[in-house]
Length: 168
Image (tube, rainbow, N blue to C red):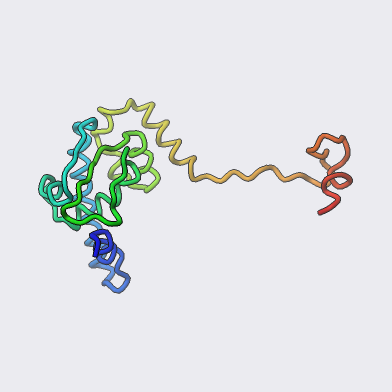
C-alpha cells in the first residue's frame, strides 16, 4: 500500500473520535509550520532526498512527511509521485514561492501565509497582491443578464425579444 493511502486513512478517518482527530490535526499543523519555517529561511535551496531522509531531516515521522508532501505538491516546480511513493522514493521540495503563498491563502492556512519568513521574501505590497489574486481566483463572476427589452447583443439594433431572444 502506498504511503499516501495510509496517510489519508489516518487523517480523514470518519470513524475516529472527533476530539482525537482534532488533536491529530493540531499536532500536524504545528509540525507543518515548523517545516515551512525552515524551508522559507532559504527558499531558493533545492531540497531533495527520499521520504525517509526528509522525515529525519525535519525531525518528524514518515506519515507526517507524507502529509506534508501531499500538501505542498501543488506548489512544487516539479511534482512528486505522491500516489505511488514509499519511504525510499526520491522527492523534492523545490517550490514556486508565489504559487506556494497563493495556495496557502487559498487553503485558508493563516498560520502559514502569515509566517514572518515571508517578509524576507516578498514586499508587503507583493504579499497583498498575491493575497488578492488568491482570493479572486475562487470568485465566480456571472455575466450581465440581457433583458427582454434591451438592444440585442448581436448588433442588429432590434430589441432582444424580437431578435436573438425570439427562439428562447
